[in-house]
Amino acid sequence: MWFAYMDEAGNTGRNCGDPAQPIHLILTLAVEEQRVRDLHEHVRETARLDCPGICEGPDFEFHGQDLFAGRGPFDGVEPAKRIAVYDELLKGIEIAAAEVIIRGVEKPGLARRYRKPYHPHDIALMYTIESVERMARAHDCRVLLVADEAKEIEDGALRDLANYQEVGTAWGRTEKIDRIVDTIHFVPSHRNGAIQVADCATFVAARLRKIHDGLVKDNDSARAVEKLWEERVLPFVRTNEVWYPTP
Image (cartoon, helix red, strand yellow):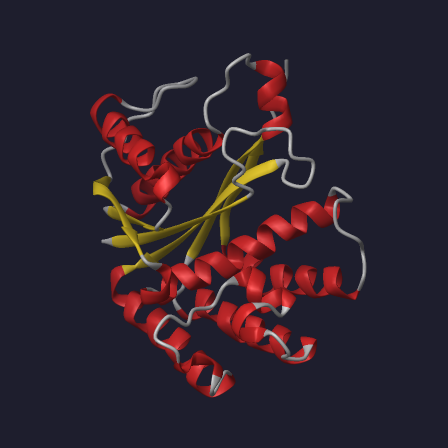
């Protein structure tokens, strides 16, 4: 059994015209069952050793946005320290021998192509499910999906997965989904270290695209993101695809 921890970036609902969020992205961290404990312990150790005092609240968690930008519990922490903690946290991907799957959709193109487009999350999730299914076939394993709580999309996501398990995916070549078991388990992220690592990796993946697309300045902050990506995420990426719809 493998566990696939999913998080998203760029969710603006059905608004496909936000110039600051052109891509709806889902990143999945796939971890073999016997390595899940190692990943969770690494997150706890990183909090204890690198964030003493900060991590003591019952609702503390690592959020990529907060950690990178110095917000929330990391307000006032100097940038070099925050990047060092970020780097340490993302080492969990290697410790868990995880595989990273990134799927997404470009929203302005979606709006141009369809008068009433599907919710971008629905499309990104379908592609994610297909990629997780292919990974499961390659490893000859079953997979359980785990995601951060997100009330806006939960019902639709549960419905879509059940439909894919019954009749296959809907667009292009129908793909049978039989390696993903049960349903999607939505959990509070502050109770799940693997989701927190997925969140931090998702922030880096989404930020990197914005840098390359000129939406974020190329400065020291951008170079820190590129370094985190190249050293901590990229070596473990199995799939990294965004659909750019054409008219």
